[in-house]
Amino acid sequence: GFRTVIPMSIGITRYSAKKFAIINLLSAWVWAAITILLAWHFGNLIQNFLTWAKNHWYLAAIMIICFLSLLVFTFKQIEKAILKEKRKKNDI
Image (cartoon, rainbow, N blue to C red; front, side):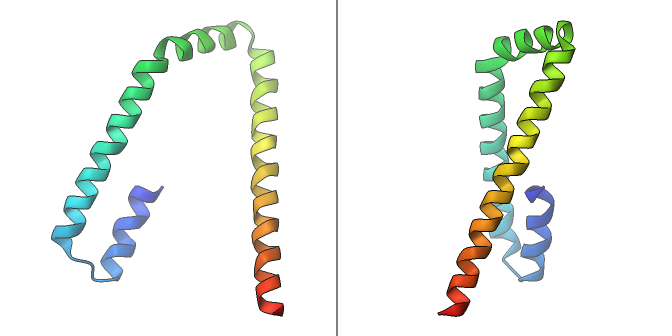
């Protein structure tokens, strides 16, 4: 997502390539460290859940559908709140 869009947008704004390269390298290291630490710390839990989901795929499918529905609902509520705030600012 952002790791693809950000370099293009920074290129358009004529941001210093050297400064961008340093920031990009540091952010990549931070992202990798966070991902590795979370996978290492929760690896056993994730593996146990995947084994459970394989054995109880029908329950896992219901859980995934519920989670995705909740996610969509939450994003729609946030979008409504943002639009309401923009309308309120435009009216004033």
